[in-house]
Picture 1 (cartoon, protein in one colour):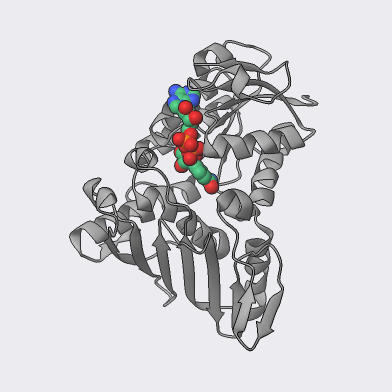
Picture 2 (cartoon, helix red, strand yellow):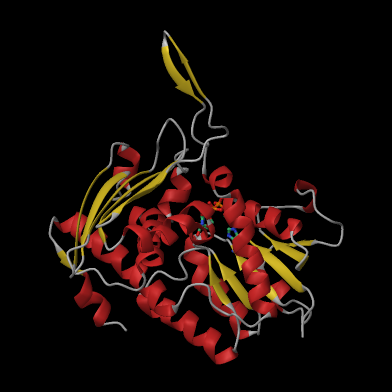
Length: 337
Ligand SMILES: NC(=O)c1ccc[n+]([C@@H]2O[C@H](COP(=O)([O-])OP(=O)(O)OC[C@H]3O[C@@H](n4cnc5c(N)ncnc54)[C@H](O)[C@@H]3O)[C@@H](O)[C@H]2O)c1
């Protein structure tokens, strides 16, 4: 039985940095490698025992290595996940696992075949506000409508956006996963989405920066999600559940809750700047759960079906927004599970 998990972080960009903080703060891990072709050891303030490599293959030859955190750019995920699982390493991967249903299925097939952990970076599941929101459902449910606002800040670079998949697979996938987390594995009947690129350069990538998505469920439940790549006032993430017996709202987080009222009006501190601040605790918790999962053989934090459903909703919403039509999600989901 492992006592500590010897780990490698592949990709040390925005996501890699918050995973590095989480690994360093945890007693469950020994960090052995950081893999990033754009880094040299001088760029880093890490323990001398940590080796900086430029390819994951080099780290994977080490039989002492137990696990890999994959936070490389999205187009590399499938290769890095499958390479790691094939040689017996547990994997924590940033979203998405792959860019197609078949790639996602293969990741789960491999993890199951090898008896290895495969955790997915849907950190909102580890956020205490959303956990409390989920608990409220027994008091206020059954739920009739859900409204989510999900606005990023600052806008990611064009280099990032170019290879991110699209706003549905890169950003809204978190919101679709939140619906699954809150509601359980309930498959929407249909989705209708509209989008616009206020930023011409994003439009040139055939992507949107602002999107509205509506989802309809067979029992009448309706969900509306609005999302934007940029919100100048800070990272904006709110969910409202409206149910037969009441309403529950998860509000934004601020550095303090003080409101100052004068004859000039009212002011309060802004919402948090971006996701590393908003989800700092959740990022730490998800990596801790991964470490404990390896030690206690709890190999998945998101099931295959849940992962496929969020992917398919993202595909269906993208199809809806680009064809201006209502898309049957249930049919798409049933044909792939
Ligand atoms: N869960 C979240 O909240 C969240 C937030 C941001 C990003 N992400 C995900 O994390 C992933 C990375 O996004 P990011 O914003 O950190 O991107 P980024 O561009 O900031 O960082 C990517 C890093 O990977 C490195 N890299 C490129 N090719 C590599 C290779 N072959 N091997 C090792 N390293 C390589 C780059 O040099 C860069 O440092 C994306 O898939 C994204 O979807 C998730």
